[in-house]
Length: 419
Image (tube, rainbow, N blue to C red; front, side, top):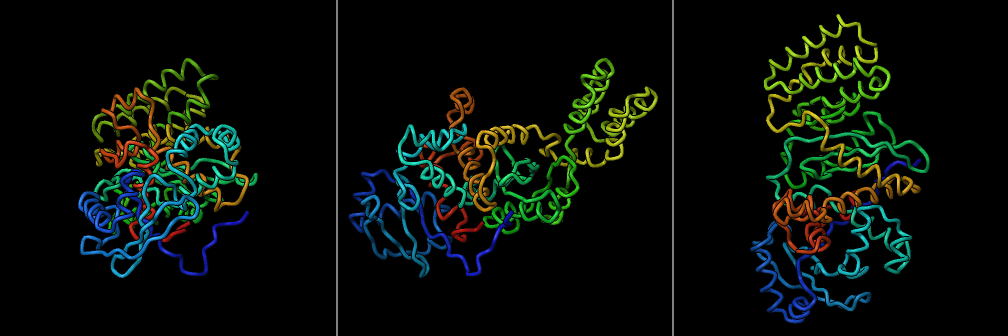
């Protein structure tokens, strides 16, 4: 199976600025230089994050052309001597289609409707929709989802989703926070080097918008290679063991076979978790372990309790970091959706680069598509996970909002093809 390949030539930077224009307002602005300048200046003042650094110091109009695919006039501007294309949000990247015509089809990708199904309902051919989804994966997941560098999460969750590429075992290294997927990269093994490269994509994207960024904590399931990878990427990070995985380890091995004692063990286990302070937690775990030794529990239960006591410091560390994740519940919910998606698509049939674009594109769709109406009402009209993370949206339509958020690829001044 081919690993990721790095281009020998220096990649071209993404110089496309996507802005919230309707077709009517764009036609007026694009056809009149003065109107265009006034609208761009308004947007620079309102949303400077959509433009390259230094735009506020001045820019000039350069030229324009008519798109052969869509018949839309496109303008280019010059910022600091570098040319940038200004694209309205009502048209898809590379002029492949109109946003309003594509958004319902891509919305269904949240629920893993196959590409041939999209082609049957919405026309075109399956590869058209697949390429459109993959093109979204070229954007920075972190930069597109997190619109304010000050909101980069201090506390992360990380785990690997087992999958396959061309039938060979592979893993999707997932990083999450605030109910959003912030990292999804395919690794060809669960070894430290492969996971470091996969999780390193999150580091690269996060530091693109905040060069000094380092999370305070990362919660993992205890896999040594995962912990070593994160410690190598962020030496100052504190690693926290997920308490839930201890429960799962006992439940999966003992619930059916040792029903009566299982209920008592689980009750005592969660009593440890509910401890308010670090000292209380440590004491409860020690007492729990002592009880387990005297109770002559089955080895499948006793071994897990003994292991928890051995790693008591890694569990208790969370008490020093308010807001840190003591369990992986939130990540598990996200990975459950990813698991359904991968199963419905029957995993990956190409190579790792295309698999990565696919899962990254799906992750952005997942972050930006509307939640069910009851959830939207609960959060006062904030429609998607990304909106709830940022507290606002650029556009009422989710796909417009995604494309605008992905202005400049979500990198500010990134490579066009960073993967």
